[in-house]
Length: 415
Image 1 (cartoon, helix red, strand yellow):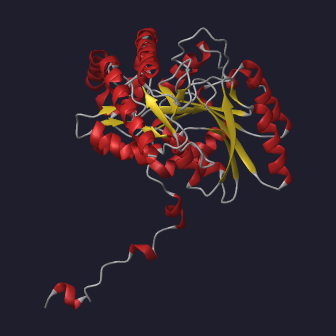
Image 2 (tube, helix red, strand yellow):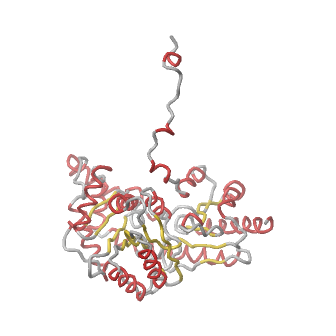
Image 3 (tube, one colour):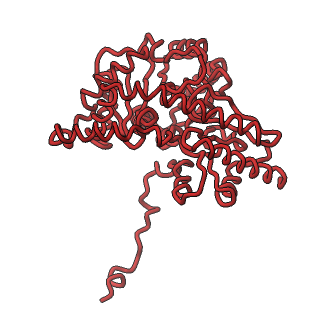
């Protein structure tokens, strides 16, 4: 008897069994671009990827070889959920050099990339209907991570001095007046993604004052402070925190290699223990081998030696992109001048929809970027785009901006 006929020939209807959370899942605009970029012959301003030539392959190969040769039987096993003690001790020293002090390694948990840290924040803090405060614009992967937990967003605009903390306080008052439960303020205060701006010292102080006044948690996401190109004064929010209100998170993806998938969260021990419980059911532990590669890169000074070199290369690439924008972009376009980080945020004239334009850019002009609306929780940013300058070569930057400018001109003329 035919197997399908015997069992009715019915295909399982997955629509009946999806969880409610799947309704809030969105494909990352950046991940969606990868299938195009993998075809080759596309100049990519899309992802937040470091220059592959800056990855210290030889040194990492030596570190990996020595680790496997001398300690392979142990480090290829499971490790503790909180992370290897060696790496957490090195991170304690690394953060300490930058003014971020913690009592012990127990204040740190290692994550599988900082993206896992964002998901952990949602797991342990957000209930359906809770409110999360973010910048406008903000990191799109943070939006995607938090919205799965069915939160509401309050967006606070950013200007040249970072988050508008005067508007932040107004919005906090309004939300409390409506009886909303604000779970945390998520901010990238230094070399913000996607805008590239850094929050002024005065606003950092004001942010912490607001957090204290209204009893709020602050999440400081810091992947980019290692790449400042201008002599600006800044302090980490965590270094200014006197009440244990700031959770600090960072990653090795930008300063060493994104493929290692090693990040960390640091903060109050009570919060770290809760993160540890939540992580246990996600992946048990982050790869011990990859953790120890990162640990050795810190211990041997490899990262500290690399950072000045990378910073100078990225400064030149940023300047190349800024000059190209000034030379080729049509009238009516504007852009931020980032003091650090990996991106330049560009606004086309208001009648240009950068999400619709992307298909033409990919198919006709073979250039990729991330549409700006993805970074805005209020639905704005439809005429904006984020351009990455760290991954492409300087020659590709010039050619890519030329192509992008042609696409924008076509879009303006056809509107």
